[in-house]
Length: 344
Ligand SMILES: NC(=O)c1ccc[n+]([C@@H]2O[C@H](COP(=O)([O-])OP(=O)(O)OC[C@H]3O[C@@H](n4cnc5c(N)ncnc54)[C@H](OP(=O)(O)O)[C@@H]3O)[C@@H](O)[C@H]2O)c1
Image (cartoon, rainbow, N blue to C red; front, side, top):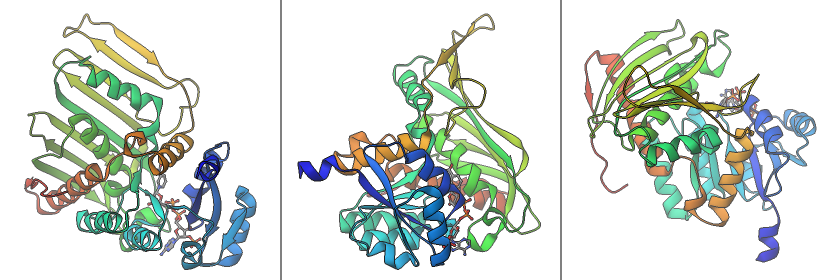
């Protein structure tokens, strides 16, 4: 057993996805987790990807990866529409799963995945690298210590430009759309800060020619009385920012996955309630988010849930329920009530 734990946790990657390249290179320096194999629907593509990324083994089908006894866990960066199916198949094959965000297309799928994880005693978590970053760990520490008092307002946004119709993000049939892509980040940050799912959601969207949501703005009402405004877009210059306003101060964060170009990651805090309060910049340690996330996942699998810094499955269900409500509100033009979860 000790010998087993001294070896890295072996991850298999489902699909030669763009994000998997960055993930594999981020994780490469780790001594506790390794990317041990990749699978593609095309064996030649898998072989090229493995060579380019320094991955020792490859498979010409996803099924072959799931039956590989040399793999402990699966990293699932497939299009959103395939997250549920292949994460479930991976857990049924005995693998733990680190699945890209959004965990699935909707809350119904996320609940089915959670039920499979429980049934098979496997770990299943949603990949948000920013949750493993020092910047976010510091944010949580400040909020828990009451540094800005009771939170009343949250504003989180994430926008980026995508216009190539061949990108999976622009295709409705594979789960495209700004909300599930960038918006899942903005929503996850708001829920992390609020510590609960919202009770009510109102949203407005602009739609792309391909039929996916291109820009979304939403208001979330939390049981504590706090309000959040989230926005996301595929039609703007890159921006990623959150402002958290409490009764005794404010914190601003970029909730970055990876350190920014041109400087260290920081949080900005203003302590005090007046315009005279001086912004204080808190510098935090830089580090690759995929590496931090993968090592946190290894500790989750081998040591237990308290070592996982990311979203718990209950939080992932809350995120999915909120994303569902935002889309429903944007489509209907009316506010949507969000039911409390029973037995999750
Ligand atoms: N956490 C983050 O920061 C972050 C960043 C980017 C993306 N993501 C997430 O990662 C996932 C993948 O994004 P990506 O940009 O890396 O995608 P991508 O480059 O388009 O790769 C998706 C892969 O899925 C496989 N696939 C299977 N069925 C497919 C189908 N019908 N259409 C297209 N591809 C199919 C393909 O692999 P094979 O051909 O090899 O089988 C393809 O390479 C998404 O869920 C996205 O939200 C997360």
